Image (cartoon, rainbow, N blue to C red; front, side, top):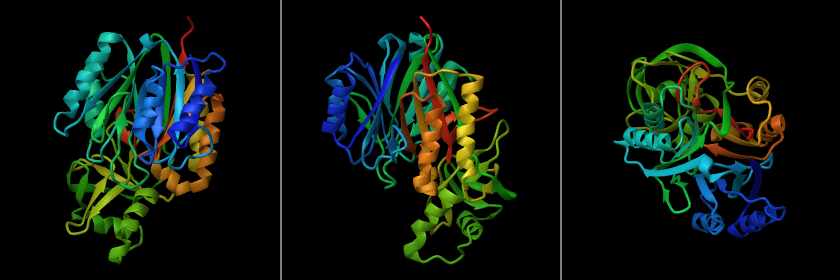
Length: 382
C-alpha cells in the first residue's frame, strides 16, 4: 500500500495537491476525506470522482495531516490500494431501524470478505452510534474490529454530514470495510482524564438525556460540580461547553475501562442535560478532573505501545480525536498530533470529531468522548 496525505482550503487547492501527488506515478484508489462544513462538499467530491477515486467522507470539528490544524479546510489521506481489498457502503438513518441498517451493512461486507475490519462514520447529534456498533456486532460477531467517528460541524451544533462520491446525508452512516486477510488494521484508544469525587447514579434518563442524578435535577448537579450555581441566561451555553470539555463524565461499564461522556446540551426548563452518548438509567459515573498535559503524554505513549506490541510498521495512519480535547488544549494539541505521527512517521490524516468509536481497553465496542483513537494500516506482504 502506498499512501500520501494532502490538504487545502478550496477544491482548487485540493485538485492541485492531488495532481502534484501523482507526478511520481502514485495512483490513489481511495480517499479518506475529512472536510469542514464551510467547504463546498460537492466540488470536493467531484475532484476525486473525476479521477475514479473512491471516497469515505466525514465533516469535522477540525482537520489535519500534520501538526498544523486546519480551519475551514480539507484534509485527505490518499491510499493506493487494490479496490478488491476494500468496500464502501452508505445508508440513510432514521433513528428507529439504525441497528438493523448497520446489521445489513455488516452482512453485505461479509459477503465480500471473510474477516472485515470497519471504519465507521455517522452524522446527526440524535444518532445513537451504539446502535450502529451493535448492528455490526450482530452481523460480524463480538470480536469485530470497528474504528470511527461521529461527524462534526466546526462546533456550530448545526448539521453534520457523511458522504461518498455520489451520496451525502446529515443523518446517515458510511462504512469502509477492509479485508483483514490483505490489510492489517490496528488501533488504540486513550483518554487520560483522571476521575474525581464520589460515584454517582443516574436515576432517570432516556437515551442521551439525563433528567436526575442521585434523585436530583441533572443540570443542578453539573452546575454545582463545576462551581457555577448562578448562571445568567446569556452565559448558559458557555456553561454547557465548560462542562463538556473540562469535566466529562466517566461512565462505569460492566467490562473494560470507563468511557467518557461530555455534556452537549441542556434543557433549562426540565433541568436536564444531553450527553454525547447514551446514559442508561441505573448506571453509575464519576466526574473528571480538569485536563492537564499528562493526558497528551498518555496518548503518545499508547501509540508507542501499539507499535511495540502489535504494529511495528505501518503504511498510513488515521487519527480521530475528540473536539473537546482540541478546545481544552488549544495550540498545545499540536504536541499530541506531532507525537503520534512521529511514532510511525507515515502519511496521516486526522479529524476532530463529535465522538469516537472503538473498542474500549479490556471491553467492548463503545461510543467514546474526550478520547483519541489512533488507527494504523499496513498491507500484508504479498
